[in-house]
Image 1 (cartoon, rainbow, N blue to C red):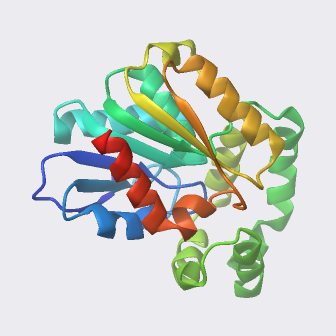
Image 2: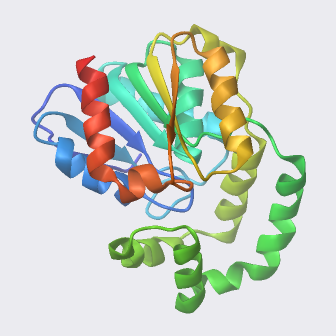
Image 3: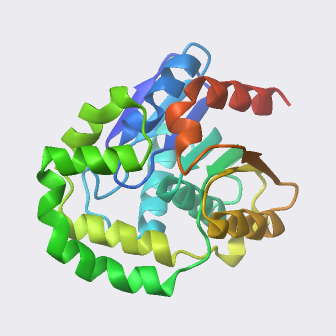
Length: 247
């Protein structure tokens, strides 16, 4: 598994999982802010630019990250965070291993499957995938996602590296994921974060996760769209995470 690390000399590990179609730079600013106190690990999710494996499922990706944690960190870390697809992988990690971490932040984790969207992804991307490599189209998508401007070159460079098969695979997995019963056994203190301008389905997902995770909390970030919290407000993300770890 390919990972980027900050603060390697530190013992306590924070692992952050990027959103679908992005890469480790999703959390680069947070890692730079936290690296003086923690060892911050940024894995590249399967099927994404510079990953060492195709995407075969959220469950498989979670298992591979757990295997890396076993090998590199003795089976557990201090905290796990994730955005969107990364948050789904993080939730799956908690269900596969209840004691993998002490703290978790799940940002915009969809856990209510959407059958219609799932069915449309394959045909839509089969016909339009070629546009992804066009810089003008990538810029249009980038602006639609409301990612801060300085990340465009990272976004474009890595988006064009994703194969059509992998893109379809992780997008379909994202729209089909449902939480596993084992999530109820998680021992982590979990914080769900949702942007105030996200789709209602995301709010319902956060409520469902709260019911499944004893002692968890849900925080609404007013005025923010999907992914803006970690991508566009890294200082706030790092500050909130430090407060959670202190608590």
